[in-house]
Image (cartoon, each protein chain N blue to C red):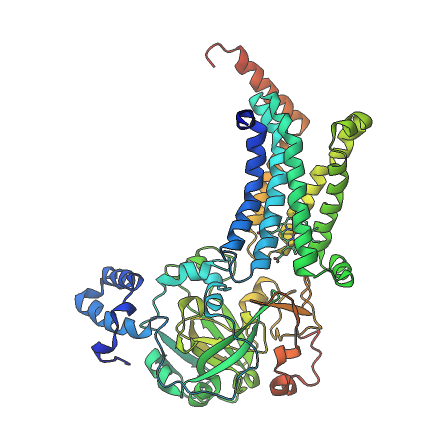
Length: 312
Length: 207
Ligand code: HEM
């Protein structure tokens, strides 16, 4: 566990919100000692705490980053409500410790990873990526994380593993949005094996150099920058390697509107709106949407010969 | 001046301006969130629809309460709905599409929710133009026939909303339920039933 010396914990880091959360944990019956120990950890994993040892990377952009405030208050995370400001308002009750991710299915080395193992799995690096939402807006976000292929390599998939399925936590007690059935919970997403292995595909644990805020998918989420935002599953608890293409939450909800691939593509419109342009949050004029969100050089070869109108 | 404050029409007018005032205040205080243009467009759309619903509730309310004078506010309410529809349309033309005629035409044809919203807006125009007393007199019976269009407009407005949301249909369905209720209250047999209830209450001594 990344327990820092106590003098590292500034009193300013112990916010009333945190105290509330700890009290809740206490009342949930973990006992005085456990609550005390958890308090020590909480200061380390709370959103806003700087992540140690983050390296730079070649993945930077010549575009202005979207302000932290916008990135953390304008979110689609239906587990906390369908309004854009709901996640920031309702995600405070999500307990991100202890947290485990089960890696299972068609792998030679299945396992359950806790967050401390994941944080040490590979060097953390900062990657500035464009994020394009299927609704027609976009951001530029400096994520902190490590490539998904690091985890896949350790899990050592069998020859049958053709797809990877990602499952988000399902707990209506912590995720109030799951009390209403807007989607068939839990949230499921998926990637083809080569997409999952692509160097761009990131498991993110932070943004702006700090621990990921709950509303952005804490404690660990996927970032697939050439696909619409909803492909990047948040608050992941299970990564499963499978032979058949997973049925994702949005495909289940509206198969005519959301396909498995969901690559950013200005030439293939959503049935109800155009995808040709986008509003970059913070900018006044709309800008043209780029094929594969501008990552064609890194990803286009994976789709060579595929009819992207059919495989949308 | 005093007289103005005693005039209920002034207060109705002032209340109708509140949604716009709120947007202006939020705009100057940085309260429109990360995507201000979406916020403004949606807020104006919401208030257009609310305006239509409030306008449509005048007649049923009058029948339910017997307050015939409520009819005096109906035109103002309807015109406010049109006012917000104009602002909603202008934000779309200006802030969403930047006066690009080709893009706008394509959007109206291609996106069903825009097509329907546009149809609702176009139908509102003749109603606004014929809202004066002079026009009422000139058109006579045909005025009423023409203004029945408002039912279609409200239905189109709700469809517009139903088609634009990504998944969570709760809010548009609330409007759909309210509109259904407002329309049911206009069915002849419902009107008769309500009248019967009211006249029986009037004769009963204690009410
Ligand atoms: C009587 C006419 C209309 C009514 C009652 C109406 C009502 C609404 C409502 C209730 C919303 C959703 C607000 C929300 O999400 O909270 C909305 C959104 C919207 N409307 Fe309208 N509208 C009308 C006409 C139009 C017209 C003529 C256009 C453009 C040609 C238009 C374009 C839009 C757009 C672009 C949005 C925002 C969609 C989004 O943010 O995804 N509307 N409208």
